[in-house]
Amino acid sequence: MDAVAEALARIARVDPSLSSFAEVWEGEAVERARAVDARVAAGERLPLAGVPIGVKGRHGLRAAGPLLAAGCVPVGATAVPGPGTPWQTWGVGAYGRTVNPWRADRTPGGSSAGSAAAVAAGLVPLATGSDGAGSVRIPAAWCGVIGLKTTNGRLPSPDRTGLAAPGVLVRYAADAAAYWRAMTGTPKGMTTEERPTPSPLAAAPSPVTAVFSPDLGFASACPDPEPLALARAAVERLVAAGVVRLSAGEADVRLEDPAPAWLALRGSGAGGLGEAGRIREVNDRRLAGLFAGADLLLTPTTPNAAHGHEGPGERYSTALTWAFNLSGHPAASLPAGIGADGCPVGVQLVAAPGREETLLAVARAAETAGALPLDTCMRI
Image 1 (spheres, rainbow, N blue to C red):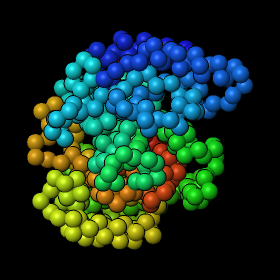
Image 2: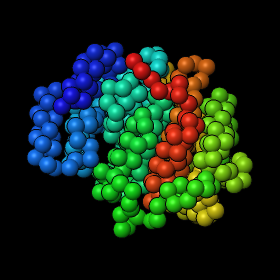
Image 3: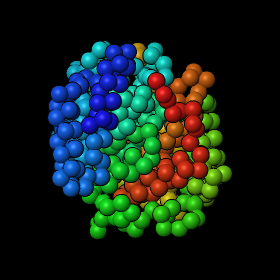
């Protein structure tokens, strides 16, 4: 009950300037917290008893059932883009547009805008998201938190195209692992029957093998120098800490640009579904070859830093993320550092399908080894 009360008080104090919540469910949260306390007092073991969380959008509770069953207490619906707005818009909360906690004149990213901002500002330790083109990873990068996109189809998603997958935004890797255990019913330290063997880091002391690509082979003119340099520096820290081992330096990763296929599947592109199928087949084959020889693919999360609320113009901030919505691979964004503008950027980790545990193990090892930049741990 105390943790929920503290979260509600913090939201009341901070959110008028942040607008990360579209709705705050104060009365319901207090009732749920008391019910959780009663269950624990009755001897029930709840792994996430009393943890206050945000859920993405006003309908976010529909996907949060396993978290509630584990004892989480939803305190409100986080901000998402308003109805009828272009896809580049980022979040509309109870007090207006959602702002980046690091700079109010910058976007937090989207569409899980409110979830990322609320976690970065310490309003809640965990907030749910969904990722159809980078909608968990991009706001995670620009708000300096950890964002996990799960394997497409691994958890239920209402997206008819199959491009969107559930995910989570957290400040600490252990909380992402707790989310995964709750959502999949996996006991701590074990895997479910249908899951592959534990991640390499969990199974052996040697680092996982990784390849780094600055542009995935199609976005060579896209990444800005600073986000790319910070991502490279983050990879160097992972290597120095013994968390990953680069198997080929900067690998010659050559994917097809996923934009035509993604847009065609969404019904908003000029390309047909036949071309979308071709791009998907080529990329799936090339990614299968890559993951036959490496555990991780590393890239900058975004080609650009957080922009203003007017939007990115003609530029796609999704350039390095949406290939893995098309392919379905699980991916995560970890904090890479702070740019000259005072805003964070991220490094993206991609694993083979079904290997969320690899991503979580690497994130936890990086955190433990001090390979994640401490200056992204915001305290408002």
